[in-house]
Length: 309
Image 1 (cartoon, rainbow, N blue to C red):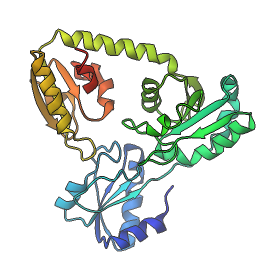
Image 2: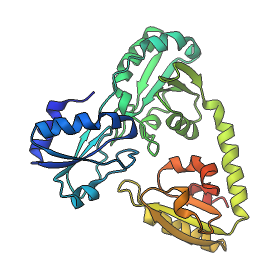
Image 3: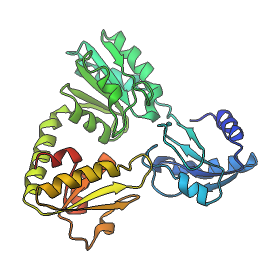
Image 4: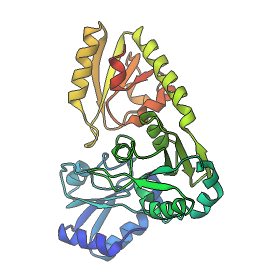
């Protein structure tokens, strides 16, 4: 749900008469509704159908090219990026009550006195109810804070809210959908991580995956050490671009006697590197790419892995 009155106030303040609408995949069913509502309020609307992976993935340059006064970015919060046109952020929290699901699974947490709650922006509103339910069962509950995120919110590239309470909790509970974010937390903490899956309607401990993730990382590094041609990927998305890191990685690889070159795209797909003799891809963009090794057919490393070759 979102506050139409508040959104309209922001658009009026920005003097927006023409906007580009950008939504994540899960909200594309709503774009006609959004467009009609804007048009009814005297604001011309254009809909971007490009994939949207977060606030790091803004279509502000396209908005400017299309003559728009602003970009209406629905589904994520402001990360403070410099943009070509004003960006109106509407976080669009989903109305989810975790209490029933927690009650069925709370026994799985009985050996932990203190619990840290984390989620994605869509479910931040559910943390208060989850906290109350856990406290009823005798747990101490902590919700971390971060300079640029909402309390308890994590991103695939930013787990600072979880790290802020790492010394206070005995385990973490991630509330949401999809395994990408909770597995990212597993990789960044030694504490047990539980996943309250609102789609699968179950709670599982996924920190048991940590050894598997580390073994997979070591195997990738070992395989990459015997290969020669390294492509270093730099995304042109405004919140992901990191050419400085790419240049640093290139210098390291050249010192190791590797052939290293930088490649760039807005979003990298296997088709875009087809025909280029890349054996290893070093990803400086969104961490999601790291999980797509099978799809790309090459070894994929994170920048930190290069220093272990």
